[in-house]
Image (cartoon, rainbow, N blue to C red; front, side):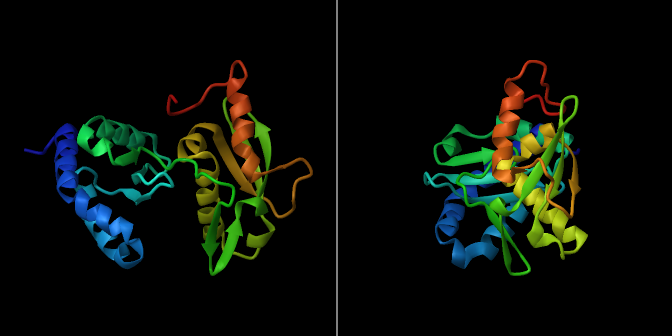
Length: 211
């Protein structure tokens, strides 16, 4: 008999509980144990999901983190939320587990492509308000010469890091990469505050995830 998703959730947390002490030790010395961390999580996650995108690490407050990503798929997000319902309370003392990638803290958000560091403050967006979401034109001079796939990966990372994956799913519609800086635009680091202002306005509704 195929196990129900509820049974698979409980199986995952039982296995995670057995391994989490060793996992925490590896995270504390992550530079020497990246491969072990990756291999262990690739053994654990299939107990619950056919495939999954994840990050593990440690917050600035010293709490251990498991960050799941639904890869913008609302159905996968629902599965993640159900998984979190069965998380043992004993794990909650040390671990924060996220259903989607949270907004990164701090002002120096950056990523690396082909050895070049791209900083958040190099990216500008022009926002076009639609009914329930925002289309954006995105400009970054530093990525003009890169392949389209590299640009898409960079945009996905920086958007999720700047506003959180749930807000990307809920609030952002079409993203258009433009070759010239729009006249009316804001730095990407201000997008989160812009969306927060929209949410405070009457009539603004999220489209997908019921935040």
